[in-house]
Length: 623
Image (cartoon, rainbow, N blue to C red):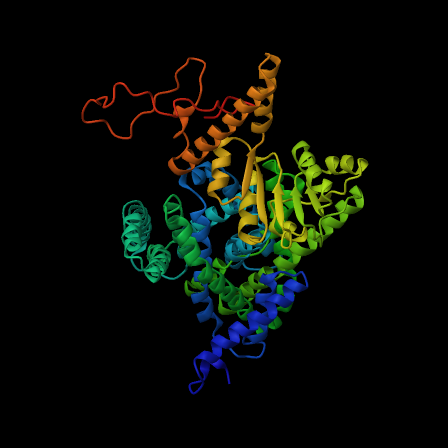
């Protein structure tokens, strides 16, 4: 008897079945190197209507599990400040429309070539052109690629696709041969409702959310903060759904509006457990939704359409990416990862069937095509990555990081990393070194160093490099953005390791300290201090006095840094020595109400009148 049809069975049995299937399948597939998404999909197929038959209504589970995608987009939104989202506008409204238009035309042509009627081909292309947000975001998260430039481009395209939901549903209504109640007035009302929902969400995010969380934080009730986080996510999703828009888009906008809130990290921690569980449930439900009867009834069409549509879409994505000046590797990665249909196709196909555009059989076949494409995507990504790695290894003769276990992991082996390695190797410490510069790796081999090829901004590469067992991770890359991404990944995924990061300048060092890095050093500071001491000696200053001055510079610099950690960058600007004899005059936070009076005219000036000189970077001094 199906579990969800039983009336005399404990309600816990379906929950145990779902959790058991996930707990068994996902670790097994990850152990085989196939990824967690494929594990969830396979588990869903096994326990679904066409497996053991434990569940007969996967659509009901899928509807609830879509909240996992909603929460995922909320977490992504928390990481995107409005200024950053604005910087992506060209990718969202430039790259997004170009990719969607070319893929839609190609997919419609494939449908017509397969003999589908024109309305069915158009609806099938419209459903397949929208990529699965759940699969793409999950794979990017597992690889640690969401914050990378190539990951941000995919996120931008997914955001644009979410904006297309309303126009596509309007297209279905326009193509419907059935009479529509209300006609044009109904369409105008739908557009007005969507705009009102967006305005309401933005207003609530700007003026209500932060005061609400401040009030709840004052109550010191942890469970209320968790409930409020869920309320914000689900409320934003509901508001967008009522307006006919994407629930995921609503959650994403709510996250963006809260991205600069002081409660951002707490919200992310509260949502994370629910996001992970519901997203896994979503993939399970997608696996259950594969209708093997529909596949068997129209197997020739399905067998031809799945590879044809995936290849056509991948080819268009690759060509658009190359046209927009992406590298071959990034274009290929995007093409393979975004070649499947998305979960919105289920909604679109059901709407088209209700509108009388397609029949029930066509709906079942198109749904099966989309589900199979979603199931094949993780496998295709895995095969392409392995093939690419194998080709690179055979051409370059360089070992990729895999199964290393050194006590210290050095990421980046330029001039900075090479000097760092000397102290460690002098004490016979087991060091693993990775870098992504092939020429540098070859040159280092000529000097007796073993450097593995690996991109430190990828979570899977860090794991393969032994970060999980390392006692310390030294981030020595010369790219500030890459250093930030590596530091964030290492801090969260490998808490057992002490984290040391090369900082670009004072602002970067403060950011790293706030992020929880154990130690950072500005790349030019120590050399500049030594240079200043050498200059004093060249001017015949006593060596002991020069050393004392250098120690004083370091001490005051440390005090200034601690002051800026607590009060913000620029708080210690009045401590800087200048060549005019007087440092800048700090502006008070509030205007004094009366003139200050000297209480002790005979007293001497207090300490702290002077402070260390500013650090010189490769450009202008950074205060």
